[in-house]
Length: 229
Image (cartoon, rainbow, N blue to C red):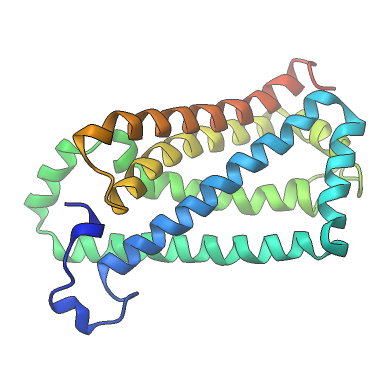
């Protein structure tokens, strides 16, 4: 039964965030925000295919928006969103582990999809990737050839290192699986699980996951092949 259709029952005595329904809604809403962000971020990075001027101009625009405050507002919102999403995911996982007998859990795993069973693992990898990505292409501590203000050059020089590109590709594969199951799950949380809509739900999840992960994977591969240089 979709979460939106569940009754509160006895959990109504607890707070919204203490209930499994509340935490699922928090994870769904934050998931929507993060899905929108990674999609917009991917579209913005397509500037790399247009050359140094286009990408550096785009990066300058982002940093100067709202008199330089826009990027910090966006970062603050994303930080809170990521923390809430991670908290809800961890909290629900721990609750499920404590509530389900081992036998029931084993039966459920047989019916679960591969992406759903690996959500917590892809989530951990993505959390590590976010930290590395910020240190690599935003602040430069993890980028030995980082030059402030040269977004395009940092992008190219960063992906010219095979190990760095390999980690980015692995992270994007994890993002694809995470997005696919995430879109499928939050549409169910909002009560859209119905035979009439299931094909559309699966199509949207598949297109978004393949598009975002595929385009992002193309960046390090294009740099390694010399398409972007």
